[in-house]
Image (cartoon, rainbow, N blue to C red; front, side, top):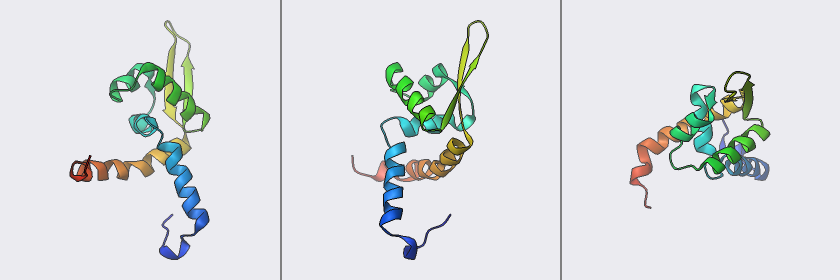
Length: 113
């Protein structure tokens, strides 16, 4: 959905802000972005999202699952495997965030710290 200037009102600004707050929590965006490739195990997220602690990663995965962006899948094997993969809504959100990541690669170095 493309929004033009005539469609910007208080409600659309509120929706936009709530969306940014939801995915803008520290590490949430990075964890979602790491899910681009599909299902991942905890250790794969930990290696991909540099600097995140195990505790914070576990918390963000639970929150993203609670919010309906990721689904947790337990595979009964020895040892048990747990995968986190994007839901259809999560995949749509990740696709929407990818241009933001591309913008960051292009412009982030030019921004002041």
